[in-house]
Image 1 (cartoon, one colour):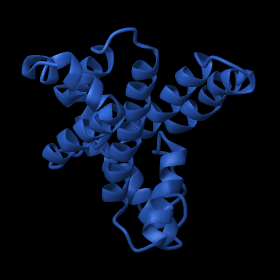
Image 2 (cartoon, rainbow, N blue to C red):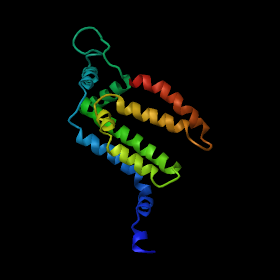
Image 3 (cartoon, rainbow, N blue to C red):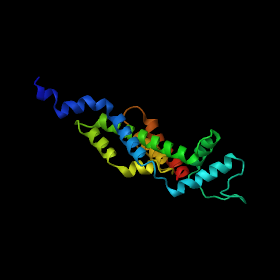
Image 4 (cartoon, rainbow, N blue to C red):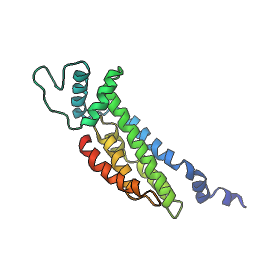
Length: 184
């Protein structure tokens, strides 16, 4: 084997193939870290509700009767747990969102790697993730976007699974129908 054959791009891509899902997740987390200063102003609403719920003030934004200003009850539940653990609810939501999208990205890259007929499928998805600032910014914005992305990704992967996992294929879309409205 010549030196050129040993260093060919195709050979390098084949050698990196097992790491592609990790590279996809790292691409998302890197961009999320770079954009960490951005927080959606709406992220502070469930954060405020979480603080008030955890401190015994009820489901309110401020003193007075209960109010409903939260669009994602499941995220509120996560934030209440974060407050109970002594964490900032908005920061917890940002970190959880980024991790959820990184997991979704890794799972998608893994699926593409497993099903792509050439060696470029997974690297192209990783490259796309590496330049998609919008994905990472929304993932760590403090809103429900990261968790909703993971739920929809799992549903899509379940619905398109091959083999004997027919219950997973049916459960994926059903799970998304049940969970996504609770996230947004």
